[in-house]
Amino acid sequence: MDKQGAIKIRLEKLRQCMKKDSIEAVLVSKRENYIYLSGFTGTSASLIITQERAVLLTDFRYIEQAGNQAGLFEITEYKGETAPAIGKSLKELGIRQVAYEHDFISCHEYEELLKNAEGIEFIPLKDLISKLRMIKDEYEIQQIIKAVEIADNAYTHILGYIKPGVAEIELAAELEYFMKKNGATGPSFETIVASGVRASMPHGVASEKKIEAGEVITLDFGALYNCYCSDITRTVFLGNPSPELKNIYKIVLEAQLAALESAVTGITGKELDGVARKIISLNSYGESFGHSLGHGVGLEIHEKPRVSPHSDIVMEENMVATIEPGIYVSGLGGVRIEDMVVFKGNKPMILTKSPKEPIII
Ligand SMILES: [Mn+2]
Image 1 (cartoon, rainbow, N blue to C red):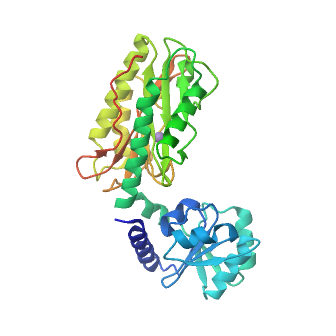
Image 2: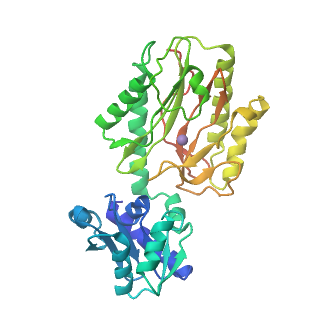
Image 3: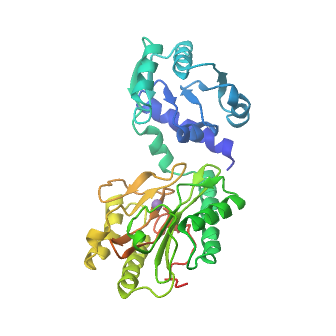
């Protein structure tokens, strides 16, 4: 499926939902949402979509790019502030009520919109677009597969760089350099390299600390490819780990493999999270697994569906999520293992290919 074909179907689905919910028009200004619905990847645009019209407003910097990328949209150039341009367009289109991204635009922007669109009613869009984005189409899955592949290759590459005396930040730089040389536009989030006792911090962003023999190292990173994210975590040992860390690794891996087995369509986020959490708790590390099992990944690094103890969402075919249990012990270190999967009936498509047996460098 080509990109334009995919976008056409996404717009049709959005319009069906709008009809069902009696929404006359939607206003989209969140970047991931306008990329999804129009194909335009610049950093500033607003979309106004009705049953009949699809308008993309942007400024001088992006007119040419928008024309090239957003073939299904009428492109409107504006000068100056955004809100007056949106207000003018809404009036010209004869719109009486518009659904806006209430969870994205700021209070100030909202006030400006109201000021510039007298007589037009603003209603919250709720999770209409994020729900559509949960189910990935073929084009999206292809981009995600490529983003995961780049990260997998970067992991293999970085293993050769892990040695005593190398700083976490050097490893992060090498990972990011490798990913960009291999087709990524950048990292999908700030690279985490947490060594030694720092590995007890689930989000220990790479620091100037030098890695020493005998330490555990958690690497959590991802590639951004054609606007789609990947996310992988591996934990490796530089020299022989302590028996406790070795045992923690074994438990996390067992929990991760069990969760992958259970990653079937029809399971809820809560149930899936529970599969891994139960194993970790039975091994008395329940308190040390303080985050969710996973999260959706796509145009955003963290999106729906959540795989957490609070998530009632039912997993459906072609949802994409991470499975990433971890155990963190302050003063000792931590272990996390993370793969990305596509939900497919009774057996997930596991995208991440990097090995998970404990590696002692
Ligand atoms: Mn993750």
